[in-house]
Length: 88
Image 1 (cartoon, one colour):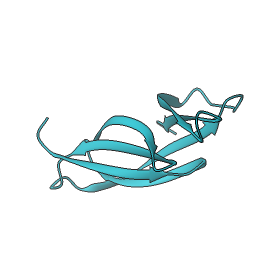
Image 2: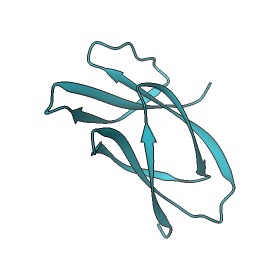
Image 3: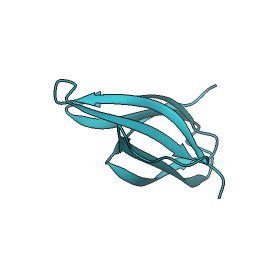
Image 4: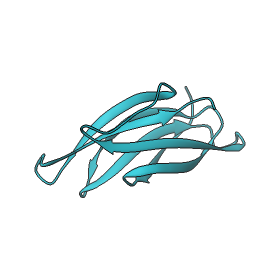
């Protein structure tokens, strides 16, 4: 895929992120004690809104959420799981 890599900061709970259509999520990780998501996209594609949900261990997730990855913060004392909300 040809495109540019972008970084998005996520917070705990539901996040609505504007990305270009066709963006591919590459990775989530800790960056300076924040949850960060990296993705590659074609900057010439039109923007769309996508939803990402960040929850701790024992959090409730729905069937319409696809797991992206887990992020450890505060020397692994905080564990956050990142999901993308798909469909309705």
